Length: 384
Image (cartoon, rainbow, N blue to C red; front, side):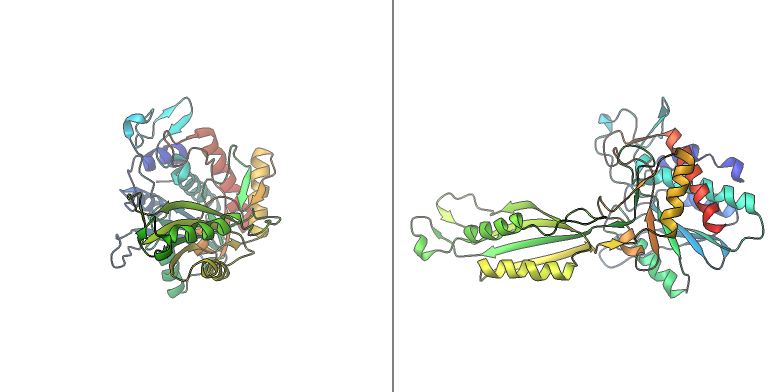
């Protein structure tokens, strides 16, 4: 299977037709491996499993040898499609209607994977010999889920086997509305707190012999909700804390509860670490309650790659193809960049994200072709 056989739009359709709801790869990795191996890439399948987790299949593929190693990172797993009858087209049909490709994963991010595969194989087909460096792929089926047995584990395997990635492009849908608008050069961190404040049950008519935890929880939540964490900076939005749940689990109207609970999430920029936020959260809780439990889980620290060689090459390639200058940004949710940043410089650029995770997720096929051209230019400039 040569470059001439790799139409990025058709490959996008084929990948969408693999119903790879996380953590299942549903044949998507098999298809990618078949195409890459037919074009000279060495492929290694890397299944990982931890106790009480699903086994996850991953793929690392490479062509060439030595440094620098330019890696494309992506995920074939998708979120569930929801009620299929509400879609205009079957979410796993990959159907094209009026130049619009419909399907779960069209935007996030099977089409970007198809684009980079097509671009990489075109480069390999053209360069043939006299090439110094490595083109690689790190593809997981555990990005939309807990992300325990996916990219993080592959990176550990690479490190153990002395395989170094120098620069990495993640194909997440970085553009809000139009292709070429935005490159991500970092991400905010994410911290979730589960707070339970304890008191003493009692009759509402006798508050002096009870201890209502709701009042204490309200005081804590008020401080958390009103605190301005920072003002942001040139590349980062201000950090924000959002209360997502408040629950007392009490249906009795004349009795105060034993405990009251709240859940919140903080998206934080590079002016904070999870440790500094934990310290602040505990300090606030201690000021308003003597008896509480605070459980904190961290999805990822904030990271900032900064403007550099790779982001410059991507920006130049976008301008060459589309005539626009992209914004360098760090907004949005978390990505596997939170793992990769410990091993490599990271830049994220892909398609348009406004329909990802939604009913009728879709992408314009012209954008798939344009993204393929951009990726090809990136590879060519990177190794020139």
